[in-house]
Image (tube, rainbow, N blue to C red):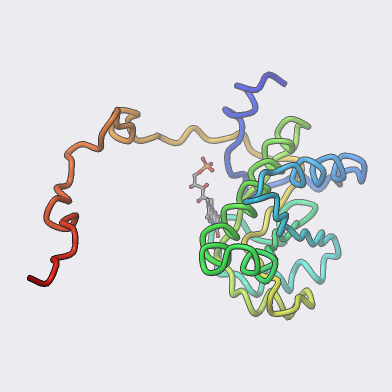
Length: 191
Ligand SMILES: Cc1cc2nc3c(=O)[nH]c(=O)nc-3n(C[C@H](O)[C@H](O)[C@H](O)COP(=O)(O)O)c2cc1C
């Protein structure tokens, strides 16, 4: 598929056909996720592939998502990040910012690769982390960041309105610019 079509078709899909995703296809998607960049190549990513219907129902019970449900589609992939791996390297920035960025990049690649294979996906962030950790047997330092459900879509990607590009893009400087001058003064020297 043309890259621009992949981008265009990448929308959150919430209803699916009862058709399994072949193992080989799923493996290609998992490999795509693995190719995501990570801060300092720390690779904090952990992926839990859940196909068992009962386990997926347990994941659904941990989520209050009212759009996509973790037991929809054929497979749920739980995208996790290793808090210790990131924090050992980058401290608080690693445990906060980088962990979520690294894992989110991987989820995005997984979703784009899925569209390229004719599949549909949805990302779910609305869930109780500890509940999901308990369902999957994750240790406390392996943080579930998001779940991606995948399958053959039963709906066409919806065209949802975007904010105007000019409203979000600023050239050279944010507009209207915030005046930081009062806060940027160097510390006063004692006289
Ligand atoms: C961080 C994050 C969390 C999300 N959590 C949920 C969720 O719990 N349930 C859901 O149905 N969709 C969830 N979504 C999907 C968004 O609602 C969706 O991406 C957005 O409405 C834009 O639609 P589109 O992806 O089809 O362009 C989430 C998306 C992101 C990026």
